[in-house]
Image (cartoon, helix red, strand yellow):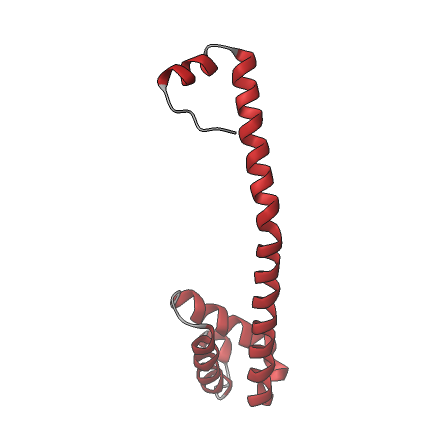
Length: 114
């Protein structure tokens, strides 16, 4: 598909329903082709990110086995810390979660501290 270069080309397309439909279909098809070519790259990146995240989670629970029985609480704390600090690196979110979880789990009524 070629780019339009002149007003005359634009008006030629806009002046005919058939030419306009052909042009729009070409744009849609080109966009589909470009998206299909991007999908494998997106999937690979997602899988890599999931693998990295799983390793971080496994290490977190390996370093803090006392948290295994409180995964719901840990998830809530982690979500709150991440939401309150959107630019924070994932490793720092886990570090802050561990610190906060140790404090919270030391308190009797910890639901109110989240």
